[in-house]
Structures are given as C-alpha cells and as structure tokens.
Length: 201
Image (tube, rainbow, N blue to C red; front, side, top):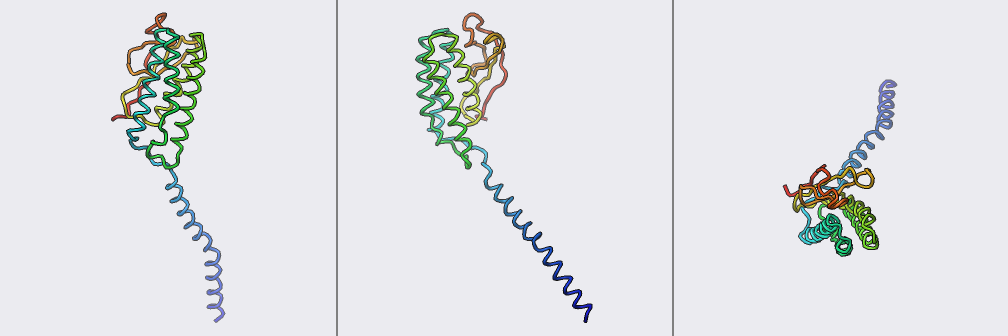
C-alpha cells in the first residue's frame, strides 16, 4: 500500500514538474507560427498605377542625367523640377505584396531623398554642385529601384572612378554604353558597368 502511494506521489510530482515544459513548447510552437505569419511575403508585381508613376520618375531621372552629360545647367534645372514632381507623386501605396509595410516605408524614404536632392539641384547655379546633388539622387534611385523591384526595362549601374577628385561616383542608365554625367564631353566615355537590374524576367 505504501509502495503504491509513493508511486502515485512520484508520478504526480513528475507531472507537475513536467507540465510547464509541455505547455511552453505549445506556446513556443504558436509563437513560431505567429512569427512566420508576420514575415513580409515576397513582393508581387505592382499595380499599373505604380509602374506608370515609377516610369515617369525614371524618365525624369534620365532627362536629368542626359542634361548633365550635355553639361547644360538650364536643362538640368528643368529636369530637376520634373524629377521632384515625379518623386513627390510616386504611388508607393500601390506597391503590392508588402504585408509589413516595410517596403512602402523604405520606398517613401528614398523618394523623399530624391525629391529633396532634386530641389537642391535646381537651386544650385554651379554645374559641379548640380553634379554633387545628382550623385545622391542616383544612389537613391538605384536603391529605390531595387526596393520596389520595378519590372520595366533593364537598368545599368555605372561607375566613374575619377569623379569628384578621384572619390568616384555611380549613376544609373537605360543604356549599357557609358555616357558620363559627372564629366560630360571632357571624359564622356570614362566609366564602367558595375551591375544591372532586370526584374521583368
């Protein structure tokens, strides 16, 4: 009788001691499942409205790049105004597949940088200072394009090692051929293709 009582007591103690571990493992499994649910899903194709607004942004950027290649301050200022307008009207709310809103927030931050730098570029009178603002715009445009995974045409990331007293600077281009916006006709073909993006595949 005593042995049976001892066995029952031992079993009761084991159950009481082990129970929290079983309960916690269920909670951990539930937490793990919850963590998986909260992860952003991979971005899907964006809406036509977003793609159209992003294409306008890219075209405005490209016009600015071409104006700097031509060393034309007047055209660069006009293109800067168009770029600011396009950045301000980018339809980031049309980005799809972003359950956590991180992609939208990141895109909004980059478009804000582009808008601010475009406005600063317009205010600059000196071509060299316009080119410095363009460098920030180019970096933000590249990062923005990678963030939203724009599915339009292929884009090239190009680099001039001699820009800004050999500090070097990048720019984005529709064409593989090098046309340097940091030197224009002084060193039109100075640079190399460092990377490319093509999310249309």
